[in-house]
Amino acid sequence: MTRSHQRFLTCFLSAVAVLAMPLLARADAAERPVALAEVTVNAKDSALVAPEVREIALDAIVRTTWPTGRRDSLVSVAVVSMEARPSREGSSLTCLVSAALRDKRTGAVYAVVESRATREQKSVTAADERAMVSVALENAISRLPSALR
Image (tube, rainbow, N blue to C red; front, top):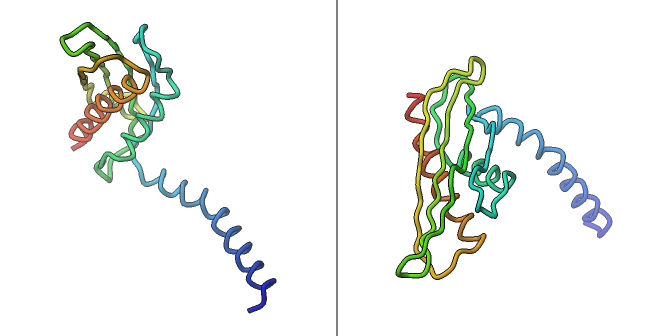
């Protein structure tokens, strides 16, 4: 095969892959019975913002195994509080989140779960806050599917 043929084939395959990605993403989203709705950050002392929490919650929803054959549902999440207190180790960081699961069409609430994560460390950083929210949301969201069974 000549060099120009190789280049053409490479470009062609790349174009096919790029065009197929949105179709695969739509198919994947259609198979998932759960979508993320509202995201709020009520923690006043937190450096986190709603878009960061949305990203964390979406990752947790994708990693969770949801029952199939059910009506579409929505998950709403909130970072209720983020508190750093002095401790023997330096600081104790505690994050409280809540997650609610409801029917997309009727709005009926299936479950509300609260989860708390705590960590002792020398000082509190934005990365520590993100890690605490991630742990707490992962825990809360992973418990929601039992409400659909």
